Length: 292
Image (cartoon, rainbow, N blue to C red; front, side, top):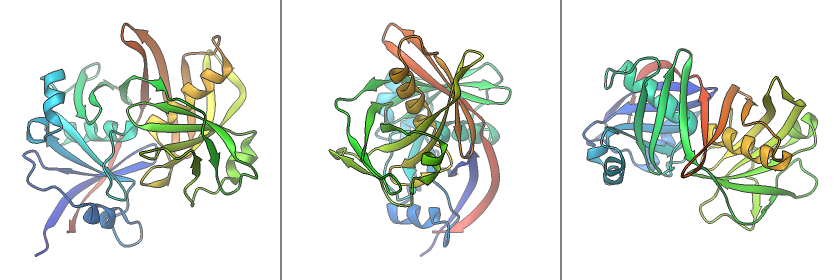
């Protein structure tokens, strides 16, 4: 017997999501259903699905509430193929916009909202023109995997980083090389990442630093979704990688140009390590109903 799913379509710099409300955890979609809904030819089309569920109604929410009792809402995020993802930097902004528009929580400009994710609590600040999420402490992973992609004549070394989810960032020579990478096929990592990885291809702007901001361009192949117009945690990973390569004098504030727009990335030090944040817009596009 089929059911109806009432949803909202949202996007952040072109990274698009289907969001639906399930506060008490009564309507958990299967991986097959999520893949069907996200299909751009036969479904609604999206890079992923976000379920709005109370942290108290999800097993993974127990650790979130122990960390911060104010994290009432959990971002239950799935990739377009139905696989579970740790979190999503663009998705969490769209998710907060959805919670506010639906009246599920209240927050004004300057307020900080705690959201539960599978990598712990993420705090999102409300701004006039969007949201800024503290992605937490980042770290470099061991090794420099080789990355092979269609359109690149030879394998390139990548820098592996973890922002709660795994990334490998590859530096390319110029805009022509960036445009020539074929991301309709999954890039190959050597050695393979145990849980897969988002793979970012970047080139510096000219000049790299302008008015105190670092500037780069990026394309991305997202694990479980394919090439997307934007990846929030990927933009942060790309900025961190380029700053690492550029050296200690490189700026801590970056503008990352992705096919879907521009994202802001900022780094700062706290007692637990260096944090990185992501700032950008979030828009709700339309509401709909689809049979499941």
